[in-house]
Image (tube, rainbow, N blue to C red; front, side, top):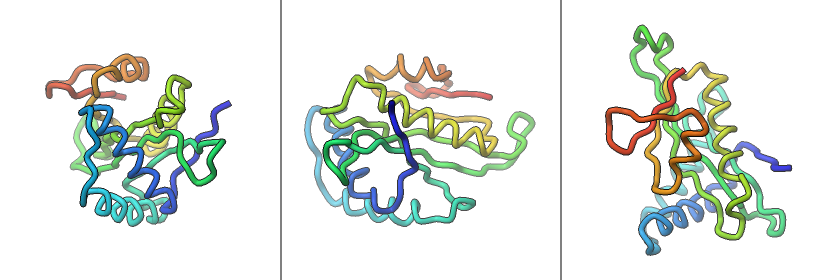
Length: 159
């Protein structure tokens, strides 16, 4: 059984570590730099928001063999735009930073984190959720209801 939980500010360093692994898997090279400290700061600040003000939700699976370490994550942002006929509350979501530690891949952990994130968006009546799919991840996102959008390499899940 996979146990997914909401991330807390204490998870910021691990979320940044997984983000670095995600970039490394996409480009083939590690890219450490100043972005890591900045990302950690943003995550700590945004994850500390009260639940009703949270605009950067993140869901994680802990590494069962290494306390304090994450096995997988999915992060998103919630944005309020002007309401429109198809978007009566004007709430839009964006999914990003989906990553699984190499030691835990192919076990459904990224899917579980992403489903938790999508459920979080659903609870808030988000009417449109976008993401940019990395190569190799299309099948996962299509199975979760995402399809093509007018922007190349974007996926949109309409409700």
